[in-house]
Length: 214
Ligand SMILES: Nc1ncnc2c1ncn2[C@@H]1O[C@H](COP(=O)(O)OP(=O)(O)O)[C@@H](O)[C@H]1O
Ligand SMILES: [Mg+2]
Image (cartoon, rainbow, N blue to C red; front, side, top):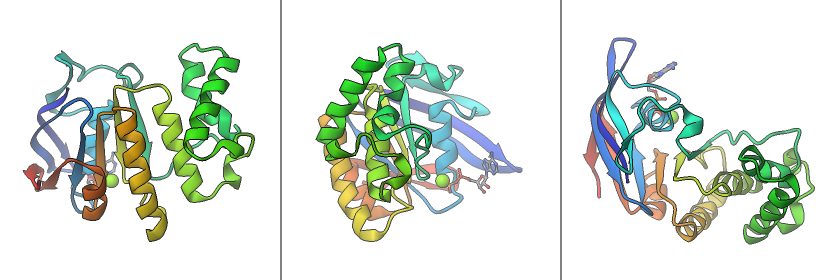
């Protein structure tokens, strides 16, 4: 279980996060909704370890990870500007995390190819990432995030750079893949429809506090 306990964070003399507590059980997707500037990304960065709270703590399976660096948390991140590696082809982008973990390149590529097959990108493995469409790039980003079997998946407005039709299609696709992987996930979005399509529970971030939506 992923747990936030009484997280507080100021920015520019404003109390951006004013006592945020949240728990996400294994295999559950929780959505965080809120208007632009409400602090959603800041909260997600604190979960990821990319930012530190002034007070409060982050826990995973009963262990306090508040001071743990991002690479040791075992979480995967996916942001709106899907930062795929432009110098690597599709297979090597997906295999990257496994190679980092010490898996041999050939074995990592084999796993990456199998994953791309399931994602409907089996024939794009040797393509350069910039030749893919926006939707394809997001699928590659998700494959790259899931292949290392992270303990949690953190999604920050993953589809906001895409057009409406593609967004709708990817919502249900991502939902399926995340369920299939049994992944614990936090989805940050300002789009309630997206939250409804992808999350079992949703919270709104208002005035630095979480309000239960459903
Ligand atoms: N490191 C930072 N640099 C600049 N502005 C920041 C930083 N951290 C927080 N902020 C400010 O905090 C507010 C909330 O930002 P953010 O968490 O990105 O909100 P959201 O993701 O909900 O749009 C914004 O006004 C933003 O400018
Ligand atoms: Mg944001």
